[in-house]
Amino acid sequence: MIVRDRPHGLALFFVMRGSVLPSILPALAVNVLFAGVVTVVHGVFLDHKIQVTTAPFSLIGLALAIFLGFRNSAAYDRYWEGRKLWGEMVHASRSWARGVMAYLRPGGEGPSRQALVMTVAAMAHALRHQLRGSDARGDLLRCLGPEEVARVAGRRNVPAALLQQAGRDLGECLRQGQLDAQMAAVMENRLAELTACAAGCERIASTPIPFAYTLLLHRTAYIYCFLLPFGLVDTLHGLTPLVVGLVAYTFFGLDALGDEIEDPFGTQLNHLPLDALCTTIETSLREALGETELPPAPQPERYVLT
Image (cartoon, rainbow, N blue to C red; front, side, top):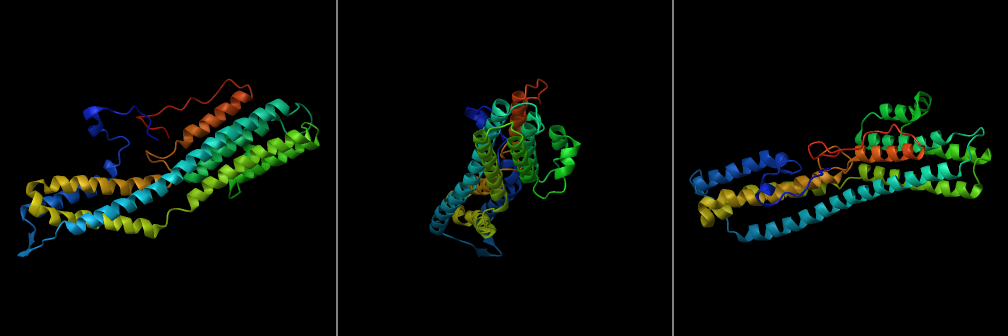
C-alpha cells in the first residue's frame, strides 16, 4: 500500500511510485508511436486512405468507459471487503487476548495464557502466507515453537487448524475449571469472528472476477486505442498522438488498476499491507501478555507499506 502525502501542483505529474504508468508504459508508448506514424502518413497505408468518422469512437468510448468503471467498482469492492475483514481480524484478536488475560484463571493443568494468545497471532501470519503463497514456517516458529508447528505442518489449511487448536484449548480450560461457561461462550464468539474473517479472505482469493469479462474489456480497450488515430488524424492533425496518448493512458490505466486491486492480498504497490497488519496483531497480543520485546513498528519503505 502506498503511504505518502498527496503531491500538489506540478509535482503531481511526476509521481511514479504508486502510479500505474510503469506497468502500462510499453503499451502506451507503442500506441503513441503508432498514432505518430498514422499522423505522418495522414492515414494512408498501401495507397489506401483509411478514414473513419469520430461518431463510432464517441459511442464506443462512452460504453467502454462505463464498463471499465463497472469492472473497477467490482474490483474495488473486493479490495474494500478484504480491508474490512483484516480490520475485523485486528479487533477480534485484541478482544480474544483481552478475554484470555482478564478471565482465564492462571495455573491448573490447562493450556497457558501465552499459548492461547499466541495461537491467534500465529493464525494471522499463517493466513497472510496462505493468501500470498509464501512460507509461514519462520513466523509460526516465532509465535508457537517447534512442537506446535510440527503439529500443523501437514495441514492444508493452517489458519483453520490453528483456530481449531485454539478452540480445543478453550474447551480444555473450561473442563479444567480455569474459565466460566459464560465467558467460554463469549470467547468462542471471538474465534467464530476470526473464522469468518479467514473464510472471507479465502473466498475473495479463490473467486476472482470472471476472466472472460476482464478479457473482453482488455481487448476492446486496446483495439479502440489503436484505431482511434484514424478517426482523429483529419481533424487534429499534429495533435493526434497527444490526444491518443491521453485517452490510452486513461483506458489502459483503468484496465491495469482493475487487474491490480482485483486480488487485494498480493505484494504489488496498491495491495493491502498484510505484513504490517500481522505485525500490528502480534504486537498487540504480545503487549497483552506483558512482553516488552516487541516486533519493530511497521514503517513504509519508499512510500510502500507491505
